[in-house]
Image 1: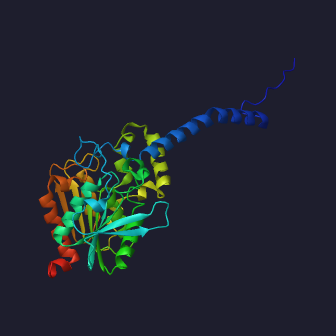
Image 2: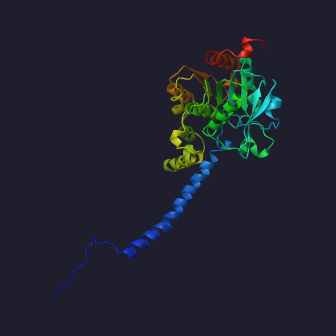
Image 3: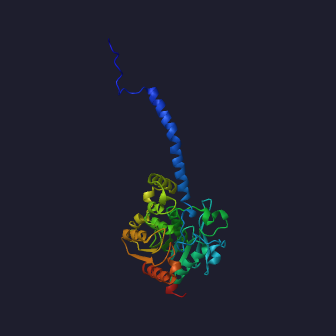
Length: 335
């Protein structure tokens, strides 16, 4: 009796069957992949708005911003004379700044800050600079007649997008005869000052107050990323990089600090900062190769060194600016 030989066990599947199996697998997994990336987009988008950061500028337990929004423009809150300057008009929302005092000066300090700081807090920074004898150009994110531009509706740029604002501010000051520039950046504003300086902006001295060291690290420390699946976590960070316009690992002020070409840097941080711990400040400080100073303010939360110890803040910032920016004209001559 002759037996019929069986087909080899490892014989390849016919093309029609392979195509059918691929279609089935695609039908099963495509919705999962789509849901995965859509969910990552929602989380990444949410991280760019203030409610995602459950921390405050005055302490870890306080709300992220005052319960009552002061709609008055910054110009009405600043005590000294001031002049409003348009920095950029080509956007849908023009960018403006307030120069105070509105007098000719050879040097000025550009103040950059996060969108969760209210206008009243900015008055404190202008007082510090005025006390030191310098003009302050405060980029006016805080005041706008457009209610759509209120802090809770404006996304974070993590300092990367704001670096362009410093270049516009420098151009505006140069047109008024200012020759020397410093930058005082708070939170993501500190990151912006470091990014702009690393890109070659002619900033003679940088004060970085409460800047994070690496965006990927700081985002992993905050809700909702701190409890996510690690693979989903990486997907979210990848999408944040796409939205920011830069690979997430490259959005790192510590790397920017290493490219300052010897320009003086002062790093300030709160000892009790729940969002940006002192380790971030020390990392930025260690990366800088030029003249540098570090102050970790005791008992201060995020971006709260000025509010916690205003006298010490004024003394340290004033001494740093005088040493590296030069004695201001207002102090050298008649006041």
